Image 1 (cartoon, one colour):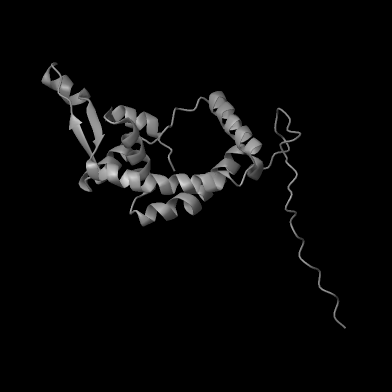
Image 2: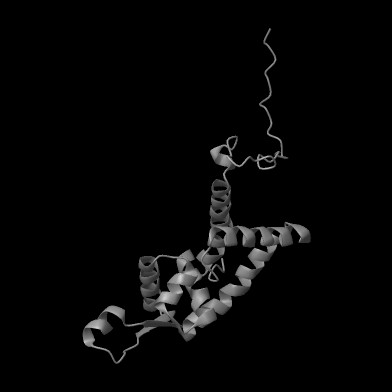
Length: 185
C-alpha cells in the first residue's frame, strides 16, 4: 500500500509584507525583498510584457521609442538635453539617434558658434529634431502606448493609483532622480 502523496505547498496569493516592520538596519530583509530588486523585476516585466509587444508591431526598439517620444514632445532640443531627459547614457543616445536618422525619423544639426575652430569642434552643440516621418510614427504609436498604460493602471483602484504616484514621487525626491520625462513606455 502506497503512502498518500503530499500535495505541494501552495504559495499564498496574499503575501505578508516584509516591509511592514522594517527596521532601520533592514536585517530581516532578504534580497528578493529589496525595493531595488522588486522594482527592477516589475520594470523588466512591464517592458517585456507591456511595452515591447506593441513597439515590435511598429518596428521600434525601446530606446528608439523613448527618444522618439522625447524629441516629438520637446524638439528642437540639444543632444545634451536629450541625454539628460532620457536617462540614457550619451553613447546609447548617440547610437540610437544615428539609427533613427538613418530611418528618417529624426535629424541632427551641429550649431556653429563664433568661437575658435578648436573649441567649436569640442563643444559644438548638436540640435535634435523630429522629421515628418518621425512625427507620423509617433502619432501612430502614442494612442496604443497610452491605451496599454491605461489598461495596466486601471488594474489598480483610483486610491491605489494616487498613492503609487505619490510614493514614486517621494522615492524619486529622496534618491535624487534625474528628470525623465521621456519614459513614454
